[in-house]
Image (cartoon, rainbow, N blue to C red; front, top):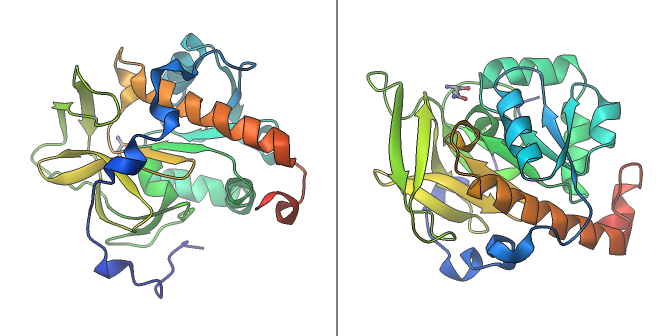
Length: 247
Ligand code: GLN
């Protein structure tokens, strides 16, 4: 299972900033505290899931470590951490999580992938073959910033947030090589897209969980709250058949 669909023509897509979509309400600062604390699952197979949990709980979310489908079923959203995407992919296969995650995402569960998590949720990668979830219409290039610079920090202008810039930590980071027309590019570094969103799927090539800047996680929690209120209206909860909740 690779999640790669060769026939969708993404190779013709360019990278583009959709400023209209970037101003979507999830990124307004005022979303916090509007509803009950969301239960955010953090995929805990490998990587820095503990740092994500700490940041999410600092922001008022309840977190669940997800290794089994029952834990996924109890979560309103899923974070896929940085780490090693080939390992995370193999373990997702081993634990039978690929199809359950895809099903939940198709039913409206928000997903946030950072670094290896960005690769894991991508539709395709430039080279190699590894299990992917295909939740966002991007093509990712692994280890894209070069062997000589495995790790670096950079100040990013994140269009939705405004000043100050976000201090971003890149560790053997991917970039987004290509993106489909429904994808909002939220930030770029050296001309390469490093943060994006499509629907309720958010990705960063960097590690917001390793800094004190909570704005990325805060934005994700706003997406989660919005998705939960939509789900409450349509019945999109774990265990409800997908066809009943996809509008
Ligand atoms: N290079 C790793 C990969 O390809 C990602 C590194 C990270 O998550 N910091 O999976």
